[in-house]
Image 1 (tube, one colour):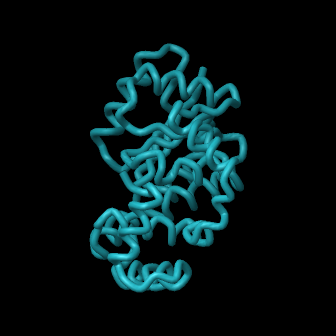
Image 2 (cartoon, helix red, strand yellow; image 1 turned 30 degrees about the vertical axis):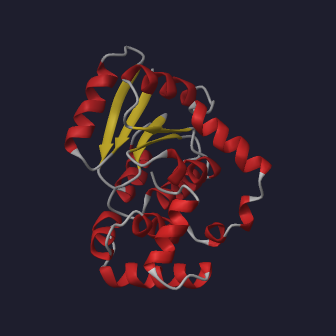
Length: 210
């Protein structure tokens, strides 16, 4: 029996995932969380095999949540579910030990397959993501300016690059607008950019947003 924890702050999404899980006799829901901190805590209070982790939740951010899960609960497999395109976060998530990255437009059958593969210790990647990972191996991506950003700075870069305002970004990441502005300043400095327009052009050029 695969014991699953759903970590998503949207009730409708959680209900949909619960219905999918209920259709498979080899899977069992053992808990729910609506934020990163709660997800880490729940993994310490119930036995979890695989956590379905949403990208956009209140708390420390999903990349930091993944880092904490790997440190505090290394036996738990993490399957990332997201509305964000693979280009934006998938590679970073896999580097942090994720067992797979699925956008939420995948079918229930694909999700079930990904859960089973993660449970067995494998990695679930789509064909397009596999191609991107191969590209990452061929090209020294570490030389690109955004590679020097912290995970939180990278999240701010992607949000602002997609045209999201500072206020909207703050609400999504659970930060204050002042903190987001500070991250924006750091991002511009590290990447040697001067304006939001330059930041947006960079993000689009390098395919960091859909």
